[in-house]
Image (cartoon, rainbow over all chains, first blue to last red; front, side):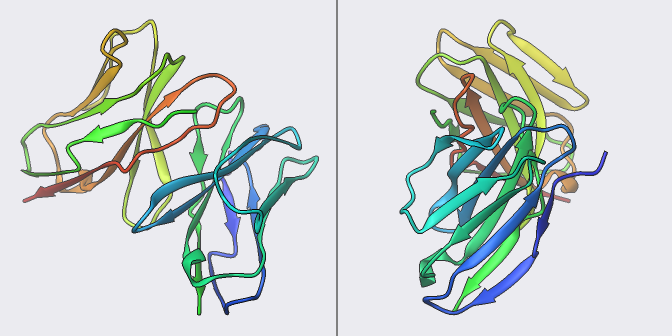
Length: 111
Length: 110
């Protein structure tokens, strides 16, 4: 089985721009979770989608949003980028929501 | 959702030694999981222990769970340089998100 894939792997944006990251889960997995990892804050949970519905949400501002499509692929969007949004964004998929299988991440740099 | 708290924050050992890291959590769980992360990469699931299990083994890994104390420990035996990584525990309740703490950074030197 193919693993979780994330695109793009690296991204450079400037403040004020918006960005969309994509995640393709393992075939058959219905849950996709997104995490932000920074040196200062560690690994923080953004949101989880299960069968196209947002099931859990972390404590992030509304600039961070996501969605899941009928084929379980997921996207997350960050609008009006800030310098502090520079981070490694990790996507993980799961069948039920417990054991997570992580992708390699997207490294976002905001200048 | 709840996050686990790993202890110690950092651990340095020599190759061949055992590494033990601990995890505490606050409320009841269905299972507890341990993950490893090599620098700048995605996390890798290591082992899952259910709430009705006390101990579980997988290769050089041994995990214990004490639900009365709300704690778990991960033992890596005969550590290798390749075990150098950050280790995270994640207590899980069905239907909630999997939340990670700050982890334990393990350095194994040869």
